[in-house]
Length: 291
Ligand SMILES: NC(=O)c1ccc[n+]([C@@H]2O[C@H](COP(=O)([O-])OP(=O)(O)OC[C@H]3O[C@@H](n4cnc5c(N)ncnc54)[C@H](OP(=O)(O)O)[C@@H]3O)[C@@H](O)[C@H]2O)c1
Image (cartoon, rainbow, N blue to C red; front, side):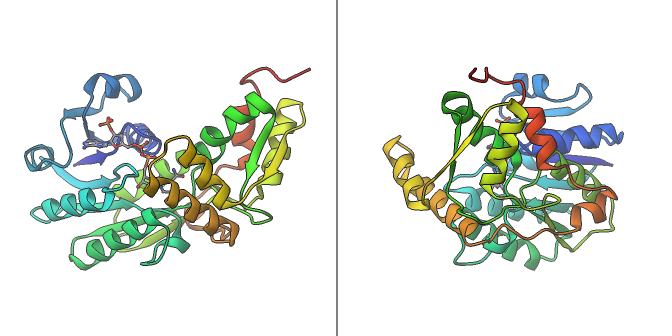
């Protein structure tokens, strides 16, 4: 049987595909850009070019498929697209493995995107279709590499909007491995798995780890979630997005991302990747430390 991956060329999707291919599983993807997919994914992936929200494209990609990984980008209309896809998939008997987000915020009054994930989960679990929900904490690739690397290189500093709260961020490679397992096994069917790193750390601790990896002092500058929103708005980020990020930073600051679970260990039978390793891999050799 074949596994269909939606969102295959993004932060998480590439690792889901890599893990499936490494396990010898027939894997298909839908992408809007075949050339890019060829560049970033292994050769043996079956690529369908098109828009996953179009019925002809999605249903046309289901031949011999028994499980679909449902990931669409963070956007104002994320819930609309995912609900449309779930409705289309109801005409088949595939299992849907849905990627959600930080578990404590998946509620009707959570941050904007997490409210969308809440709505999608409600529909998915009520359809009667076989499912697994994965609720990962913030990715190290986003919160640490993408958000901190530029300011580390530019000004030997990071912004800390979480105060003394800890975050148990997860490496997206672990999400990929977990997704590959649950897509190809029935052991976890009907379950919601909360995916975290092996320990929770403060932003001050991350600054110290980056400093150690680079051999230079990295300052953690205290800011508030409202400061983050104001800065994003001043750089032209849309209002809903800036508001969502403020809400996420407030959730972090209130300790909403501190929980450490054993779900990655339970599925993979090994510990999740550590923040120490991630920082060494991503910060040690990038940019020139100041003398
Ligand atoms: N960042 C975090 O820390 C974090 C934490 C927890 C949860 N999340 C959740 O993770 C999800 C985002 O994951 P990500 O960061 O891996 O996404 P991403 O890097 O933005 O990738 C999005 C993918 O969707 C594909 N895509 C978008 N529109 C498409 C369309 N119409 N048809 C076909 N493919 C389409 C893109 O592929 P092509 O360009 O090849 O078409 C791309 O592969 C969101 O649901 C977010 O809430 C994020």
